[in-house]
Length: 260
Image (cartoon, rainbow, N blue to C red):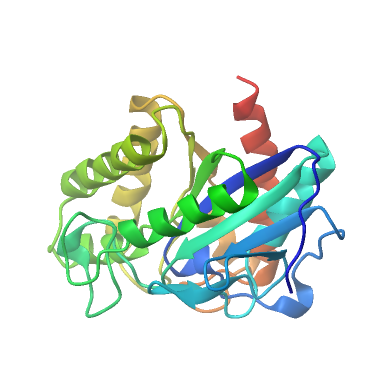
């Protein structure tokens, strides 16, 4: 459905990463946005369409939520707190790695090289969205790291390599989209019944990056408690209760960081 976004203040966020960024929840319990407050951009057809799950589209090797995501909850909370219309640009792919050394089969990587690099796909989509909406990007929401943590456990990748690749990716996004773009990280959770070492090292690296690079923030750090809360859909994916909580809480954090 094609929509006309009104002239009220708008913000635009790129969502990138792997399967928990795509969303593996349940659309029946996903947050519902108020009409006229939230949109997603789809490159196919060059459309701004009402934001509702399943968010996303299968285009440029990027994926659609199966079936629910965090992004309606994010948009609803952000709009409620600011009054601004929210435009989300979904650009994530399940199983994608940060480092090419962790790339698995044809799942893709955010690194500069690999079998299926995804960075250019995200840039094509977000630039088209900015052109369509007539605004610049306000921030990048990032949920990724599980694939690299598994690669660390398999000794295919070191924690230092993961961190340096992640830092390079942030600078690459900023080189293309603007040096002052804020980068918001949802800290990686755990793969149940797998060694925690690689996941702890990814989580630590994400904290290090947020401390090291200006305007990079951990905006959600509670994923490690999801097993105890019963918020896992399966061994690695968050359920809709978790996704709704992530979306709501990161909206609050993003607004706080914008005001700093």
